[in-house]
Length: 270
Image 1 (cartoon, rainbow, N blue to C red):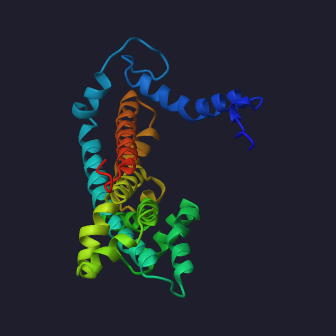
Image 2: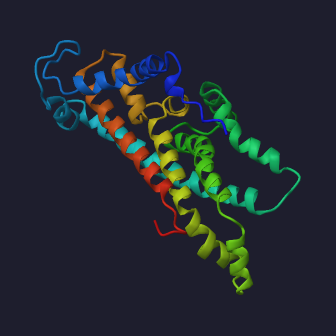
Image 3: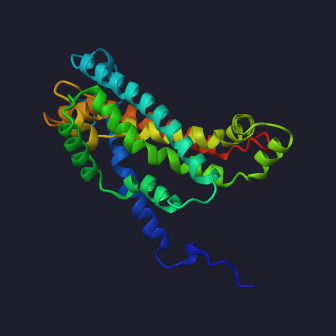
């Protein structure tokens, strides 16, 4: 039996890996480090300080950023919750409804927004809202976020459901459980890690989205990414680095939670 090929022995593997890591994470590290800089300059280091984090909450621009952050979190929670419910129902219909004529087409339609360039989705969404004459504001942002969050929530949910054998539900119904009871008491608890992972992933995608939000938001309505972009156009300030670092920290925590929840196996109690 042939031994598995060890990529670490491939010539240049370490250098390529190191280069990719630097390209991906060096800008994030620079932003995080200089958010603790005592200097108002973003290039000159004058010592460690938390002044810009204090400025985020108490400075002259704090009101604008607080309102934008509130909008972002409300939209992200609502959009992620709605998208997760829809994705759960879609996964159940596709994977537990047996074979039907448009099953492959349904899976493709659900996954299609992941492959379409985000700028195309943004323009199409804007045109749609203009066509139905809906006033742009928080509601249009929410509707757009629900739409593009569904595929992201669907992926971990469907992956989890595919790993659950249908015999669990069949055994429950053999013991006189109804289909609803088999779903709510057997399948749903087993799916919960996937559902939570899908919710967290959808929440992160919604919280961090800029392109689609910038197209469909109304005048005077801001989320945190669009508020940051508006502030950056006037020049990069250290408080922007502090806000970006806080947003990065929230994303890291949510990704870690998604990974930890996804590892749990309710059938084994861990």
